[in-house]
Structure formats: structure tokens, C-alpha cells
Figure 1 (tube, rainbow, N blue to C red):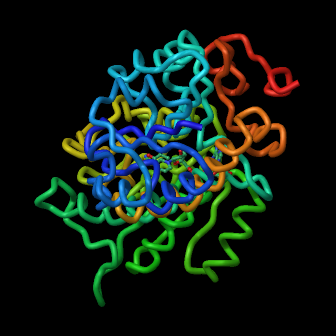
Figure 2 (figure 1 turned 180 degrees about the vertical axis):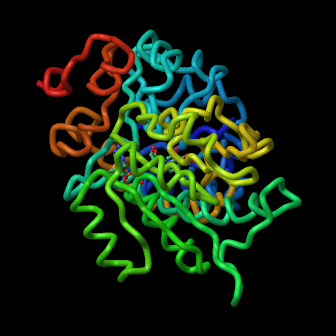
Length: 372
Ligand SMILES: NC(=O)C1=CN([C@@H]2O[C@H](COP(=O)(O)OP(=O)(O)OC[C@H]3O[C@@H](n4cnc5c(N)ncnc54)[C@H](O)[C@@H]3O)[C@@H](O)[C@H]2O)C=CC1
Ligand SMILES: CC(=O)C(=O)O
């Protein structure tokens, strides 16, 4: 198979979809690997390091897209990339289609085979290609929140860990999955007071066990969310309903009860955001805006800022799937792995992921109908 690795164009997106180690594995398996010039630079991988393992460097983005049977990326395509795809091309990347009707329309019109990292399912219903970046973003959420709580960054001027004789800051995390757990790890490590809300009693019990009483676990409902949002110095949005738009769990009225200079980091922004006052996606260049006196951070590609770590973590998980798709062809790979088949979001002008179809009022075609 001819596999093209595109350079990311999103603001400060420094990750790349394939490392030289991955390129070597694909070349060894008999595939042709094309790397867009400088695609790996932001993650510390030179063009030469790819060329040395047998990949070909392509300077022209259009030529790369025209030639490749499968495009490997990190982030969802942006407007200038829409026209580059062709019918029957496999796109293996994060897609986050539910809140993106324009992108969905473009991929349907081009009849792209869109396999989304974030909806592929692994053992025990895990999300193996979302988890590594959720680990990164969850950990980042607290270090970013801590920074914006500092006075020079517009915050209320508190140290999350406090000091002897002065109480520590309150971190409230809505959603206790991978992002929530990793945010809690960092916040507990800093010495903050930490409360996690989730709607799964099983998850709350797990969190209570692993943190050994160092976090407060609370059932997520609007009464409890309102109570805890009011006390939050740092609020982290970390909910997910896989593939669907994030539920708006934190209302504008709740945000108004927060003290001025508090901070919201809505990690769930890539699925549309879980806080009603988050009305835009921000960028690493301009990561925050202030509303009702509260600093809002809503960057949809947080791991792009720590690209070296993130690229290695992401590709550790994506490469085995990329190899399956390349070795067997996309259809056989999906037939052989029902979890991988859950990644298929669009095919031949049809939406094949129910939550995306429902959120966008589009007809739904089950993956089974496509694979039979
Ligand atoms: N902004 C960024 O750069 C990044 C964003 N993300 C996003 O972060 C979000 C969270 O991802 P993960 O932690 O991996 O998901 P996850 O599936 O591990 O966890 C989600 C949690 O939300 C809980 N939940 C669902 N509905 C809820 C409700 N009504 N109230 C409270 N909890 C509820 C679930 O029970 C689950 O524990 C996703 O949207 C993901 O795409 C992940 C990585 C990077
Ligand atoms: C998951 C995601 O949106 C990211 O890593 O950018």
C-alpha cells in the first residue's frame, strides 16, 4: 500500500502521525511510505531520519495526497485540506466529527474512508488510540491551570498546593475517565484539594480505591456539579460520550458563581466542550479568554504542545492498527477486528458511526452493512 504522512497545519500542532521507527516497520512489510517534507520536525524527527529507513520525502502536499492510498495524520483535516482527498482514500487520524458538520460533509462528498482514532475500541471497552493523548492532556490540564491561576496570567493568585498555614487550591474535575484520572494524579501530586464527579458509580469506586482517600468522589448530577463548580479554583472538563458531542454539564449560571480569576480548562472541547460559556476553540497562540471574570482555556490539540512525548505515545498505539490496515486492506482489517471496525465513521458518502449521524441529523449506515 502507498501510505502518505501529512504535515499537520493546525495552530502549533507539532505532532506527526508516524515516527521513523514506524516508517521502518511499514517499509519492511513491503509498503511505500511517503513523508511530507518537514512533517516530523516539530517532534524532533528530521526528513533524513525517515529517508534512512526507506521512506520517500515529498515536498508537494497535493502530490502526497494524490499518490497515497492511505493518509496518516494526527488531527482532523482543516478546510484547506478538504479538497486534497480523493474517492476511496483511507484517512487514519483523529476526526472528532460530531461537532464538525462542515468536515463531515467534505469527507462524505469526497467519499473518503474515514477511520477515527478516537472511536476505535480495545479490550474492556477501552479507547486505545484516545487514551495516550488523554493521559497527556489530563496531566497538562493541571499544569496549565496552575499557570493561569498565577496573577501575571490574569488568575486570582493562588498556589494550587498552598503552603503550611495556608489552604491549598480546589481542583474540580468533571469526568473521571483517562483525562480526569491523569488530571487528578497531577493535582494530588501538587498538594491541591481534588474532587472528581462522574456518573458511573463503578468509576467513582475505582477512583476512590486508587487514590486511597486523597480525592473526593461525587456522583455527577446538576445539583452536585453546581455545588462544586462554585468552589473550584480550577475546573477541568473531562467528560466523554464516545463519538458524540460532549454534554454541556456546566451552565453559564454555574460559571457565574465561580470567583473572579478562577480557571476553566475544558479538555472535552475536541468533542464540542462541556461548559456552556466555552463558545470558541482557542489555540496555543491565544489559549484563553475571560468571561464572567473566569479564565477559559479551550485548546483542542493540547498534546501538540508537548509533541515529542505525544508523538511517541500516540504512535506506540496507532502503528499496530496502521500495519493491519496496510497489510490486509482496510476492509479485511475491520472484518478481523470488531474494535477497529468501530473506528469507521464515514465510508462511500455514508455516516457509519451512529452518534455522529444522530448529532448531525444524517442517515446512519451500520458498519456491518458496509463490511458484509
Ligand atoms: N483538548 C485536547 O487536546 C484533548 C481532548 N481530549 C478529550 O477529552 C475528553 C475525555 O477523554 P477521556 O478521559 O479519554 O474519556 P473517557 O471515556 O476515559 O472518560 C470520560 C468519562 O466521562 C464520564 N462521563 C460521561 N458522562 C458524564 C456525565 N454526565 N457526568 C460526569 N461524567 C460523565 C464517563 O463515565 C467517563 O468516566 C474527550 O472528549 C477527549 O476527546 C483528549 C485528549 C486531548
Ligand atoms: C485527542 C485529541 O483531540 C488530540 O490529541 O488532539
